[in-house]
Each structure stands twice: as C-alpha cells, then as structure tokens.
Length: 234
Image (tube, rainbow, N blue to C red; front, side, top):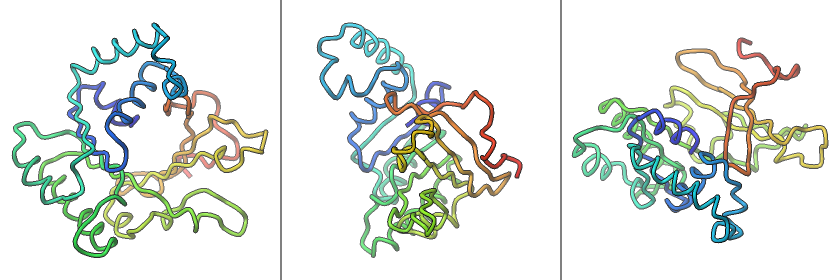
C-alpha cells in the first residue's frame, strides 16, 4: 500500500488488485499513511466526532481525484480474464500492477500449480505490456522459527510456490523484529528491516526502515545505521 501510494503521488498509473482485503480497507490505510491519522481512531469511531479527521479526509479525497490509481477487490484471481478484459482493452496501460496476495489465486488445478501458472502468465503479460508487476506473498510461519529462535523470513519461507522466487527479478522480505519479541525492551518498536534477498540486476542486502504501525506507514530510517546490521554493500 505504501508503494502504491507513493507511485500514485508521482502521477504513475497504478492498478491495485486486493485479493484478500476489501477496497475500503485499502483506501482507509492509505488515508492514514497520507494524512498522519491514527488508524485506531478510525477503528474506534472517532471519525464521527473529530472535525479535524473529517477535514483531513476531505483533503485526501480531493487529492486522490487527480491520481491514476485504481483499486479493485473483485478481480485478479484469473490471469486470462485480466489479460483479455483489462490489459488488452486498456487504451493506457498501467505503469505498475499490484497483486495482494498471491496465495489467494485460485484455479482448476492444485493450489501450487494454479499459483505457478498465474505467476508465469502474469510475468509474460507484464513484459508484453511493459508494466512493473509487484506480487505480495505470505511466508510459511511454521518453518520460520529455526533452532536459535530466529524469526527472520528467508527465501525458502515463501508460501505455496517455489516458482515465485525463481521468476522474480527482485525479492524483498519484510521483517518487523518487535512483532516477534515484544517482551524485549531494548528493541525499537519502529525498526523495520527490508531484506533484498534477490536482485537480478544489482546488490542484495539489508535496509533498515522506520515503521509507524499507527499510520500504516513505512519510511526511511534517518538515524545512523545500526552497527550489527549488515551493510548494503556486503
């Protein structure tokens, strides 16, 4: 959602296919990160009594009226239908297409075979139509805990399809250490790790970001790099 929001702000044409979450929830999270509104305030109904939040939402809707952002929660599970009914009929092709998330894909085959075929065909479609394809994936949490209790996701933890790793030009694994060790008072709640685990055309490595869960927002980490975090160039 952060990536889709940033691309929309840059004037890019973005198609966001939410296969799990209602489009209203996607827009709600995008509003929180854009306007700096605490998502708990929305969940608890504060919007109805807070004129400031209402004004921020009005400004946000005015801002989005110029965006080339399209969010759908009812299409995207069938790659052939997408290609025939959307991509081939569009007069202006999207710059980026988001699939969230790949495990929600269904087909007439087994789950793994359906996902593998979807990935392959959507990749071909992205190359043919010259758009960036961003596929979100869950990880297998059962296999994430190794003997040392490490919860950091690895490439082999991608759920349901090994072909996702093979087909991707880049794989970025997201890790929020605080989520797995809330009892550790030394952890910074906002520390968020992007692990560039695969990069066909460049370097791999770790990038530390700042995650603000109350705003559904991921931002650059502007302080000094953590000493025990591997450098980008390593």
